[in-house]
Each structure stands twice: as C-alpha cells, then as structure tokens.
Image (cartoon, rainbow, N blue to C red; front, side, top):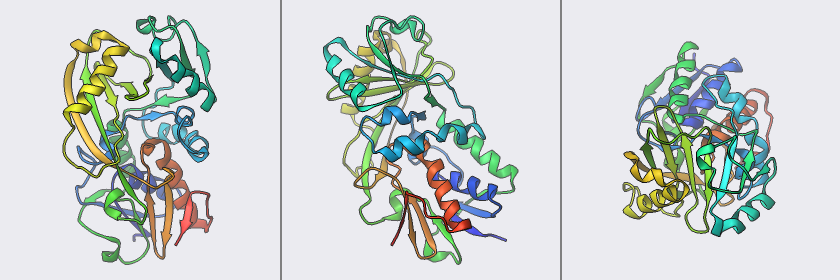
Length: 321
C-alpha cells in the first residue's frame, strides 16, 4: 500500500520520503532518471550547512530553519562539524566588514594558525564555529540506502502529478513549472591537489566573483558557484572556469597547480524572495524553490510537508493555492 507518491528523487524528494517514512506513512518514490546520479542540482551542490553565513544575503527563514539541517543529515550520513571560514583579500576588507554586519554567530580571527595554517597569509577572517558541511553525493547515496532499509526503493519512471491517483509530492524542480519559479544558473569546478589541506569550507569575498571552496575526501575541492539569472542548460562557460580558478588562485596560489577533475552546471529553481516553499494545490504538495539552499533547507520542507499530510499543520513555509 502506498500512502503518497513522490515525483523527483533529488534532495527534496528523498528527504520527504525519509520524513514520511519516519512518521509512519509509506511513500513511493519515482524519478525519470532513477536513483541520484550526475544530473540535477542535488548532484552539483556544495554541501555547506551554513545558515549563519547565508544570513548575509538570505531571508530570516533560511537562518532559522537551516540550523536544524545538520541534525537531520547526521541521522543518515557523515556530517563534518568544523565550522565555516570567511576571508577577504586585503584590498577587499570592506566586504568582510559588511559580511560581519549582516550576519551573526561568528567571531573575528586575526591569526589563522590554529584553524587553517596554510591560509595564514590572510590576516583577518570570520569564523562561524557552529556550522558544518557534508559531501552531497555521499549524502544522496546514504539517504537512498536509509530508505532501502525501510523498504522504499527509487523507481525509474516518467510521470506528472496528473498521472498519479491519490496524494502526490512534486519535487521536480524546474520541471514542475510553478508560477513565479525562475531558473538561476550555477556552475562549479572540482579540483584535486595533494599539496593543499583545508579542514572546513572557506568563502572568499569579492565584489564581483565571490567563491566558496569545500574540501572533500582524497584531496578533492569543490569550487562554486556562479549565480546567473538564466535558463541556459549548456555546460559550464569558459568565463565561469576562469573566474572560479582565478578566485581560488587568489586564495592560495597552489590551486594553480591543481588537477582539474570535473566541471558542472545546472539550473537552481528559485522564487522571487529566494525562500523555498511547500505549495499545496489540491492533492498535490510541491516542494520547490530551494535555490542555493538545497541541503540546508530540504529537511525543513520535508518536515513541513509531513506535518501537513499527517497532522494538517501549516508551517510558515507552506502556501496554499
């Protein structure tokens, strides 16, 4: 017996399946591509669970709900609790001052020896010690495994809500074509270096080309991400590669000798206020608009959708149309 069908096996759909299962419902999960792989925004994500850093440009709801994300993910995958570091080059110290004014939960650091000794040439930084990060691809695989242990498989099938009888959760991102939903193009690069060691995500502030670098296993570093108001689905542009690599080189010149392992680009669905929503349209519940906050906010959407379907509770991220 199936209580609800979830269309879309990205981070939003899988988190919803997990929360529904914990609440005692039996979800069916289908996706036109089957299990997660090298397609969709969830695959190309950075994996930073950094609600306070996001507060520099995001609405309060992102900061508030994002603080619960690490606990959710720790149930199913490895979460690294080493905080986040925000740095600006000497000529861009004004950017660091503005970032500090717009955020909370940080401390000013003037000596990076204890945190990131290889970046000690930078004389000032902000340290957000309560933040964390994960490897998105490993998290997706671990979440699929956790669902499998509950008897829930990801089925490869093409479907829309109109094809399904009964309650539906639509987590298809841009394919859902919701009103007001827009595409924001993001591009990323993965480098490998045996010479550089970072313990935590590092954000480099820049007036035109801000960068984040997230360390992963085996000497890999994820560099991201551009943010373009565009629905262009082509591969990464030469300009984006140049901007990301130039910013990484400015942070640490040794990145100039790193191996270029992978590049990627995809479209992130966003609403006008860049806050994700649970949108209820009759028997269809849409989880969408995750923008750049996929792993940070998917657990909150999943929880509010589950509360609505099981208890009729309407959370602050829920909209009825």
